[in-house]
Amino acid sequence: MALSKTAVIFGAGPGIGIAAAREFAALRYKLALVARTGSKLARLVADLEASGATAKGFLADGADGASIDAAVADIRAWAGGDPSVVLFNAFTSQPVGPTHQVDPAGFTPNLLVNAAAAQHLVYRMAPALIAAGTGSLLFTGNGMALTPMGQVFGTLSAGKSAMRSIALTLAEDLAGTGVKVGLLTVNGPTGRGTDFDPDIIAAEFVKLHDGSVTDTEIVYNGASAHR
Image (cartoon, rainbow, N blue to C red):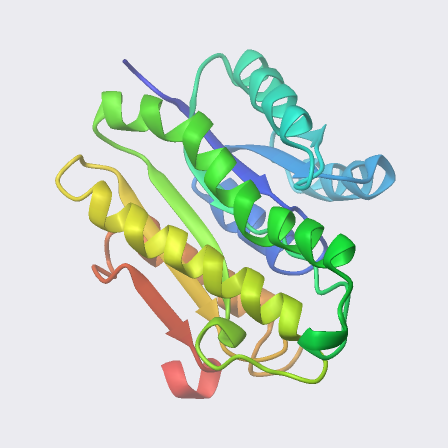
């Protein structure tokens, strides 16, 4: 079964999300941007369309599985089939605070957005890629999965650690299927004009997608470290 030349950016935003979208637009992919906020999506889509890309926004909340399912169905209808590239870029750092002081009512939604949503998206999208024997499932990781940070970011550390495990076990599960699984672990705070500029970071996703990097995971320690 042929896949649509469409890249899904789940968790599209003004940083790594839009930068990754531009990278795949340069490769002539249609862009399906997914986020919780319609006004933000409209700005991102307008930005991409102004540069000549074909893009559309889809609303979904990573903490709401039904909204993920609805977005997937709408993307398939718009793309004319199953997308060939899926990038999971969603995250939330809330609630912040020492782990023992975080109310479980806030901790659980964090895990839903940072980890469970990734597995949910894979569950819906992976079968078509496996059947086609091609495509990419990509993930934006965080250095806190490597070195958890207490006091403030205990919940984010837990969520991103779980998401990293999902990506790495998925790579093991899909070995030999033709589907590329790639994890880009960003080991530092992003910022325009810094060593962690989203535009520079996003180029690493293409390396994971096209196989020029054969490892499952790239640990990105800044532009200077990757020269």
